[in-house]
Length: 333
Image (cartoon, rainbow, N blue to C red; front, side, top):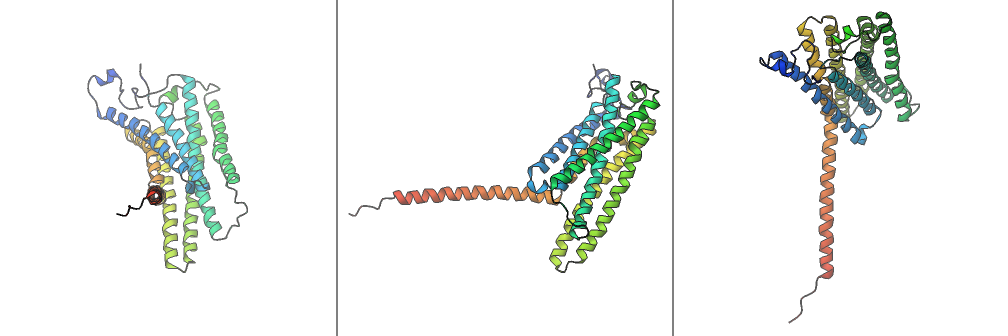
């Protein structure tokens, strides 16, 4: 009996025992790489999420927004792996397709919120927007309603479109099973995912471009050279990080669109599987291997080392003082 690991990636050779009898082909090796890449991506996303949970300096509104983006990416990677071997049950197939569409939409909404938060920070720093409320909890609740709630509304629209397209038969999943239940039918896929996603991508890049100009404008007001260099480095790293994350997610969405509508093309299909399998790993590396996080790691290690040195010094000082208290002077001859 095939499992999700011994099944076949759509368009690739079956990795069951019968499929291994002739010899391992390039396609079967590629399918193994896809499953392996997805598994590594899941582990990397968990590591990145834990990293941002451990350091208090990263648990601000920006860091919390990024953690929700990582959670949405984790859901997408996990659901993608579930469908690798194909899904035979119709109810599970349609549930998987809807769940994947919701997770993909959530990624784009949290990506936009991440860029919006950075833009607001720059405006506040320039005093273009007054800080009305500093309560992170209230802002996070609003972001959560937007980042998780609006994708739910769009998913409801996708359900209605899918229902109409199937003539009231949602469990008619023959077309979905051909692509491992990763995508809904064309109309639900276009109007429920592709159209809103590309609108959000445009808005996100708009925030990134405006943040760049704001950053340049803010830095130009600084008179001290060292302060100007520090601000320039910090703002540049932050903007470049968000641009890289947005680019990776956008490329995966474009490749998934080509894989959906050009299903007969092996190039688009293979490119999508590889990009989707490594998407989580790339984003996790981007958010954990930047200068700010590495500085926090080194700072934490230095604190631990200093604690050990201080505890050792206090131990020896205490033992020395005790020796001095109990030390007996030598008897005179």
